[in-house]
Length: 462
Ligand SMILES: Cc1cc2nc3c(=O)[nH]c(=O)nc-3n(C[C@H](O)[C@H](O)[C@H](O)COP(=O)(O)OP(=O)(O)OC[C@H]3O[C@@H](n4cnc5c(N)ncnc54)[C@H](O)[C@@H]3O)c2cc1C
Image (tube, rainbow, N blue to C red; front, side):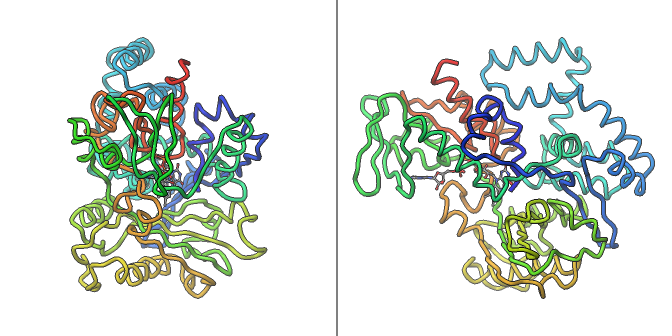
């Protein structure tokens, strides 16, 4: 739903005008995200800085002052942080980036930034804000990836999403997120490209260490003279090439994050949030009320347990773009974070099933009951419901291993120079003409077109 990464990407900067000709259209969001709390209060970030600061001030005057200081400093910080996220993970590019940062921030500023990048969300949030609600509101963003409150390297996401959410808002696709797909396919076809969908690639063909094409499940072979670019989960690569190198072992050992369950609802009206109907205007509502609960949920999912109190992201797309539903009606979705790909048990001791086919309905009911605690009567408004457990996400898209929505953990040991493995953060592989791309390659998951654009620039010598 959230196309902010795409809208702000280097790819968009270069090709946005062409995509607009092929129908790309965005719906801007001025109230990107908020959190609700068990005592009936809420806090949220809007593009209206005064409104955001006033909400924080109600929780803590000191935190409002800190927020104002962070807001004032964001323009100076943004080029360094966004610069890092857009940098090629090659030693010379990284060295150039470090030099630029040293020139801009000095030695102590650069070291402070490095320390910040290594911190966990909890370390940074508790050292920066006093209100547990402000801390929780921002920490929820770590959970979109797999940065639970105590995971090193996760402080960046609460900070960036908080500041960027306020500075730029959020961007949805007008009429649906597939606006980017339709525009991209239109642009490719207009340039003479050919796209085939619903075809499974069963083999990557190669000779003498050089990729030469692909074989489809129906037996057809397609020759590639220039490059085979695989947008697959790393573990799939050795299965497609049939090779057994050191690199293949690293790809097979690539670590995935816990899974997600999606619940899509058609509703006769938006949820009536008991914390206040202002919440109906927000794109995302996080039901992730404390750092400790997020930490516990993550740990339970890692241990294979259905969390007793799962973290929910509630998306309200039709509040921003009413064209997505019939007049007066709405769609919302619940992203249930974190859920185990393989179930070992239930942390609450209520669901006996360890098979998603049977556990999905009662676990979804647990999530819907949580939603009703914060927005009573929502279940009575359901016109239609679709539950997508982690296993079905993976069935639909093999890249979502165990329902991992980000195609691989972004923890420090598998990020930056190490995504997906040391020496291959540019998508290169030991096989000539074979490249890996997508969420498993630096700069990682999301719709920022990052790894693909960097690879395209490399292949075209730009
Ligand atoms: C439920 C959910 C919600 C999300 N929400 C957001 C959001 O709001 N904003 C955001 O920025 N990001 C979001 N993400 C993350 C984002 O969608 C991904 O990071 C991004 O799509 C990854 O792009 P990709 O090109 O690596 O691969 P994908 O988009 O996963 O595409 C890979 C494609 O390759 C196909 N494929 C794999 N193997 C084969 C094969 N052997 N033969 C043929 N085809 C194959 C798959 O079926 C799939 O179609 C979300 C992810 C999920 C799962």
